[in-house]
Length: 263
Image 1: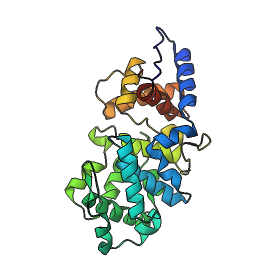
Image 2 (image 1 turned 90 degrees about the horizontal axis):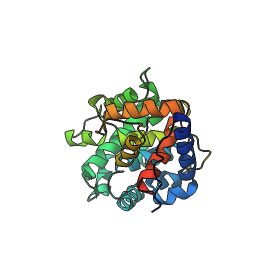
Image 3 (image 1 turned 120 degrees about the horizontal axis):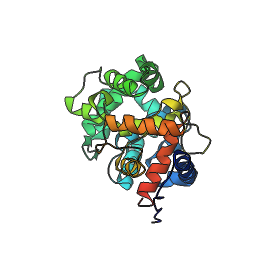
Image 4 (image 1 turned 180 degrees about the vertical axis):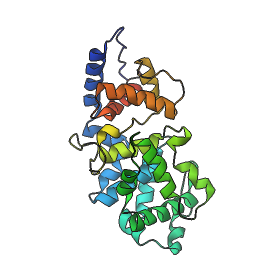
């Protein structure tokens, strides 16, 4: 582990330069083999990429090795053709997922997610269209709440609702914001995909977790102690001042500093 000492004083220009450098350091293809983003990178078709990314992001909490193992298992259970599988899914295939579990996400949740995604692709023109239709002047966080409403318009178990966060209920929605970063940000670095053209990167929010939160506080980008929607709004405001066009590139800097450098 390489420790990056915190500069004793940094003005805004120096802070931007420091974080720009760290973002470039970590937004590299060699980041992919160690991250759950490797799962959607196994696909080429737009719908396969976004479905693989969404399901992977959904279970992206806990041990990274376990996340990657279980996301791989999910793709295998769908024949590594997730879009085709979802479009043609029928109730008899629920048994395919018997015994699947990742922490509190189990076979019952998988079955609901598959049916909901089928509804979204058959009746709502796909994931991108649902998120894009929910954007307001407040940005993408209301769009996430709108997405949750659409996602659970089908019959479902109440227990499964906990696996889709709602920013309007003060959740930082870390995993969905990570998924949106993957889909929206430019693919020029070879990490994110940039396959969603109807949402501007300027609207993205940083996936707020223990690493980005702790580093953000040390750099005085964030003052609130909780990792909730209010803290996310504060961090977003700080990052947009550094780069209003691509504020979430700093996710790489904040996460890398915290996870890999012990900042």
